[in-house]
Image (cartoon, rainbow, N blue to C red):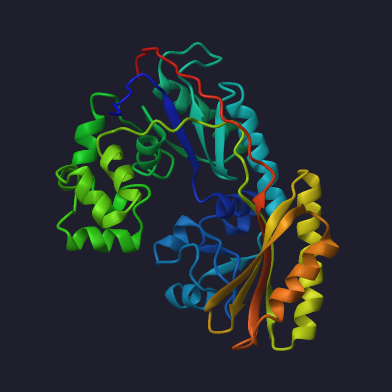
Length: 361
């Protein structure tokens, strides 16, 4: 039987509206104004929104058209991913002054295991405050943080006092914290699962906790055991300092929808070149090639092919993609094409290190 482990110190650092905040930092004219990174008034999808824009319901993954409708004063800004990567590197340099056990989730968030840390500070809460202060003073951006005994609780806690705040959930507080937590705030419980849990009379952690393992597995399959344990504060996933990529992808959204396979092939060649560079940069190859197609009505389709051998060459990738493209006729004009490579040669054995130490939060 798995048990709650109170001995770890995990910090989840989450930058506040990262892409939008970088744009506002670099361009003073955008400060205090509602901005959306990515998308446009006529097409595209919002990648990030400033807090000023979020007040109007503008958020990531909604269409630029809807965003502008919600917020007529919205300013669209083209994303600058190289700049975001540069800022992210500065932030991670600060992280490394405290621990080498850093697991990035994206450019703007990461887990830090500070059970044993380079500062010799027994308080994870004070370390999180110091890290956030340094990010503000040295980089110029605000960050929020969650601190607890595992990644699951730390991730949820980091969202509590946003922006520019932090929340600590001590070992003694974990169970009471989870019992009163609305089920929609559980990390890993999406919109569809939330609705299903509501139908089963599960609205809070306490109601989730009242269900047996058998009940949850019957209704949610393999995820059932995950829900059963996390609501009891049991989530022993380690902070992995080098995350293994499961797929590598490149895609492009077009200004004008494509209706001819000839034009699509031209774009796919460009996308294949981009994917080829990424694969070679990280010395990665794969067996499964997937073609992603998003139509003008925003419906999406994927077509995949798995080869008996690993490939990384753009010529071989393009050959497989052409086959997938002509696999069946397009049902409409196309607004986005993408190619991804999965089933990669990046499998490694996991080293498990058990830390049994007790520090103050």
